[in-house]
Length: 494
Image 1 (cartoon, rainbow, N blue to C red):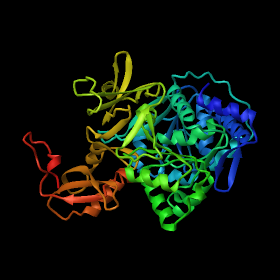
Image 2: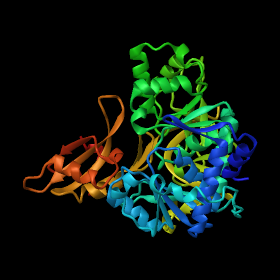
Image 3: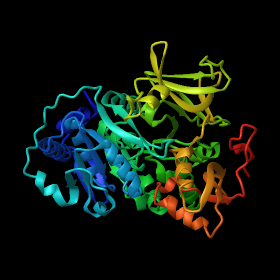
Image 4: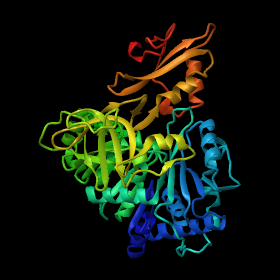
């Protein structure tokens, strides 16, 4: 069985159970299955079949889950697009993917470079599928087929597409269900943007368990008063450290009693290195919840290992725990020799969740996905070490890739556009500590002579890059410091 078949089986046995909630609307499992089958039939009529790519650019709505499952059911490849991305970035992705169909919403059309002859607007065209058969399509799908392509930051100035199979996806959703004990009474919100790999964990975990998926509007997620009310109604949540920090501050400031959150039994976080103080505060505020740290990346289908935060013991390190079932984690030095326990090495992830490849990036695929002792591994570029109990501690990056607010960013990609900005002679980007205590981005720029301003550079970058890749700070220098090899000396930057 594949992911959509698990959900279909539950829909057949429990058609009246609530599957989806969004704002004041809801859908039962029976309705979810009916809509999914009708959309799958429509896509099939458009010629979508095995390995055909379907781009999906949607704001949060009930139809997000319907589109995802319908594409899986017909054998297509789901390619999520973020509506807020700059037009040029969306155009690059669409030009590479060449989707058979683009699914979107009417209000997003002006921001989309339409590259498919078939455009389906769920709010405008939904009537087209209402009369279509609601019986399940019988499509033969191999577990090794690509289920989705997720785009991550790339070093060349263009994002790279990670191709994840149905087998990869099934593995990580099922091991998460087993590890965290998700069940049919769970209510879990979708918080991450749909272009991030963790969104599959949030969207599919409650549905595979027979629970309820709560889809949240973007403005509600950042309205902490409303989010505090959401926390009183749900049983499980995944959120990044930055969002949790803001939520905790609101709850503490408003002195909301821990008893208000008695329903919440599961909290997981990850993406960034999770500060110890956040874990301590989570334990105090959410006294009935099990708290987990998750570690992984898009190339490992998002999840590789997890750490159960102890309630009684103090936390002193950024531990991410032990591997999930059927996952192997090794630490290697530069000579690809395994390092001893307690020593630092690069983290290699192997096992059932390792993605297929990068789309049209054969050389990069061969560099990052390697086989050792008959096991296929992904080189993360993260540095880590194992403690005596077998827990992995992540120490940071071995290259110029960083994670901010759970999002992986290639600094080289930002630098590529920074150097193209009007008036910029040279520039590099690094990480910095913000006044809030969080990590941010700083751009060091050398300008040509003339009247050029930092606001102009910022506006240029905003037209090319997502908002999370825009530097928080800009520092103008007369020249970039160089080392003995005449390369930029990043250590010498102010």
